[in-house]
Image 1 (cartoon, rainbow, N blue to C red):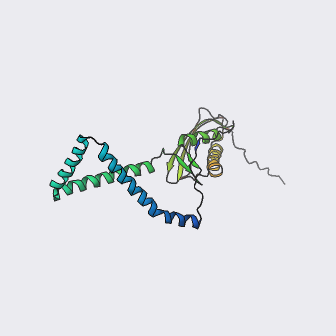
Image 2: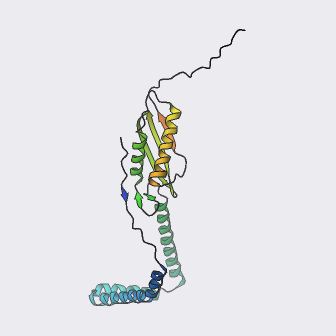
Image 3: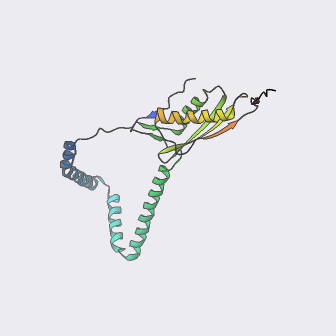
Length: 211
């Protein structure tokens, strides 16, 4: 069975800019700032002409309330609210960047791969082995790499050590050569079997010559 390719979400990869392009962008910055300021002013003018009396009254009431409550208590309350909102935004951003189920970024700006797609691809590679009945591979994002756990059901004539080493090598080779995603830790291999045919090890027999 040939391993299938995981779905790759392509990302835009910008081309390197020359020094001339950089200087051109610097020259355009004042124009961009002026354009943005003009757009904000046009938005305010449009709001003035199109907003209803109730909306304008609410805005005016809010400004009047802020002016009459311009004291230390109000400033402290608003400071706490803003600080809480900033901390909450930081926590949400941190949770998204440390989520083990977040898509895996492919080096070189080629895009991202969902962890379940990557797990399915690794599973197909492991199941190519003759001593493997089935495999369940779980992939989790960790830092700039991935953590892989493979639960493998082996055949009755499997050599457990060889199966574990072969599955680990298949995982490492697939990630390193085909995708380019590093491992955050050594793959965890869990073997399951219903029946094993134990083969005795060959014994060393030494013949002693009678002189």
